[in-house]
Length: 327
Length: 141
Image 1 (tube, each protein chain N blue to C red):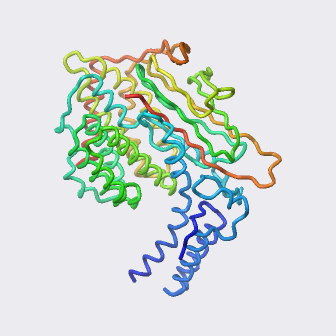
Image 2: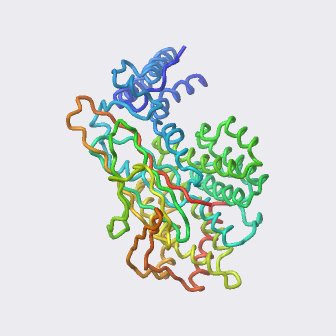
Image 3: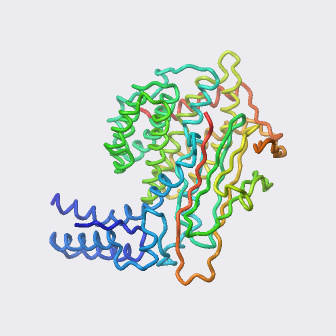
């Protein structure tokens, strides 16, 4: 019985395994594959011969011995840039829509009935992001049934993407049990979004994670533009203008995946939007920091503004991009 | 043939699953420290080595309260983190701070801030270790 923990990212073991795959592809029978598999499982599961340091710092603790520096530091700068990337998660924009006093509108969301239509990895990833944004919006507005429906659709797509563990049956059962507790449901929603991205980033599928984040951002912008500026409304219009920061960050991030055609397709769409966003006026300013009663307040004289015409162009282009992906 | 494919799949993908090391660290050691704040980013955790540094640019919205966490595995020692504006003006450092992992603040206006982390060197260490670092932020509802 294998009772050891997975020892993790040991590049030496990985090199051995890759060489084994190449050899197997050429020569070996099913029985030989089974032997190598079992060997590989044993190596990975039990960690081969552990050093005392590894025994002191098992996998759960998040540390291990640096055994192969060349492998670890290979393309390191690029790898860290692909991991450390942040634009606000869809839940925050949904919260700001609610804060602005707007009400829930189910008609705006991408129907969960379409989930079976998304059959390739690119569409699954982007629509998983879109559903994640719709899930966040439904949860913030305390639409329990919608939340459960969008979580189920997200689970379907994450399973199809091979990341079943991100939202396993136990996770779904806990969501069902806690669906009447708003705070619990919110934490499950944010955890599911994090889990999906965690599994992809740690499985070295950062380009898929990038597509999910981009899909979520497009849907969040779409929802925001549906409210912004209506009847002289100002707060969401301001938030849409401020998305210029996130858009620039997102396009820069997608540039890290220049060899990925599917990421480049998304980047082309966002670049069109970026061209419209150039009409958003950002006047640079000075940052100020105040500390009062132990509370730090960060301010700036920087301003971000846009005209109604620019908002209308952004809203129209966002619809075009969104429609392309949700079909 | 089906068994062949399953075995080959296991062989190729098990090492990738095995590299998933920081997820449990983030879930068990970091997220509980958000303490009532709603997480507002995706996943920014990685194993880092002594002497390494990294940075993350984050947009924080005006009129909102945030809690920023930078939590490192103890094996890495005292990881330094700073928060600056995009012009490089330093707003915060955890050097000398009572809580070296958390920074709470209010944003008056929407602004991009840059979080920089620096893992100390371990020059005298016979065996070098890598450890997880997670950067997580949350907003107050």
